[in-house]
Length: 179
Image (tube, rainbow, N blue to C red; front, side, top):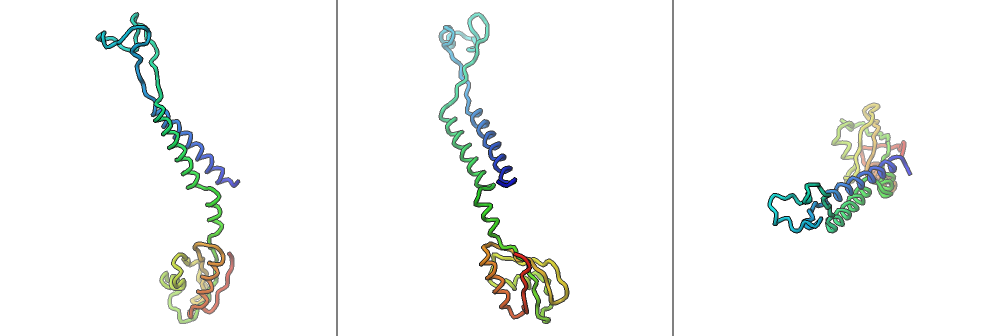
């Protein structure tokens, strides 16, 4: 496991424990046992506190958990943990990162291109590949530019975008520097 995956897993565990403690403590209800200690029904004695016995000493108050609320709390805690793990990094996230297209290209243009560094010109090189973008890294002279091609993978899609760029009449040659 990589370091970011351990960090994600640790964060998920901490958040799950916090949510579990928060929801289960919120589900506790306080109830007074009116008949505890043999004192009978306290409603018949005005001014009598249900947590005090007849001799004035205090007795513990019964704390009861509502089982329905506790079960719902556990369910929502589990749902939150699963959602957090899914969002922050399971194996599918790592696989998606590996299949991204990130290629550095050196493009030689025809001399009639007026502004090779213009964003409109760079996006026009991509033609109908809207999921991809070109970022200008460097321009050596007016006809040679270095760009980064980024978009969704896998590699064969990235190569098809480069091949479509090579067919453009304003492009003389494209050299792929890194993939």
